Image (tube, rainbow, N blue to C red; front, side, top):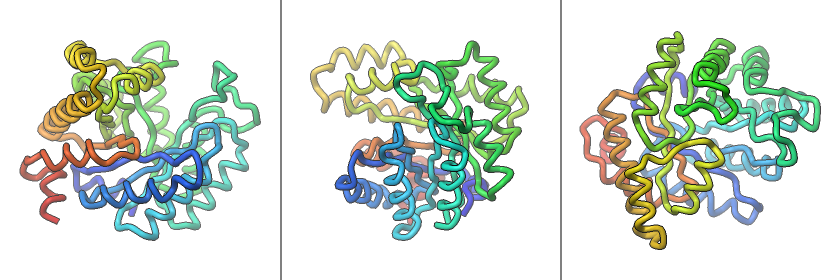
Length: 297
């Protein structure tokens, strides 16, 4: 089923996984996906292997979700450092496998480059990929967006202009980069709606499990950590168990506030771990929310 249709019954719940570095790790990813199936997510996504090394694993995991689980899969597809023909061939394979949902991304450029210029001639930007998908296929198309602005955007205004271009070219929904202050999401949503972007926008949340890890991730993606949360992390820097509980508490509060505000859904970046997300969802007890729906199923 296309996610655009699923979103008519909001709020939705979704999880994002990533492919392992080697084929030996695929069964472990399958186990985490199956553990989280108990919460009856509306869809799950699998990221596209950085640098191309694990791209085949993305397709393998997505196909497993489609064939072996009750969950609706969404494939990530990044166009950086691939020819247009290679990207098109991936889309053909996904379509033949019955995949109906794809999130279109530029992806990270090769590490030796400081810009998005590819080593091979292909799509330069996500907008070009979206335009190609819309003209040649019948996928439900998702696109990424950035509550605090894309790290390469010169301003929040230009970031919104580029986001609108994605939607105008055919993106059916938007999923945000991770963030830790809901005011950033609500401010972004206000800018989006004022710009005439009316597609669903799903907030993306990553429960913190390690101080060093989250500092590395936020530095890479340009997200910030609120002062109060940062102080708690610093106080417990050497205690991963305590940091994980801080992450669970903080993300639980984020989810409660977002659901109370009537968001379109919640998208969890689970980093192939089930503990934190499971504890968050089991701890929520709000009538009509994704967690109570899961509990009743």
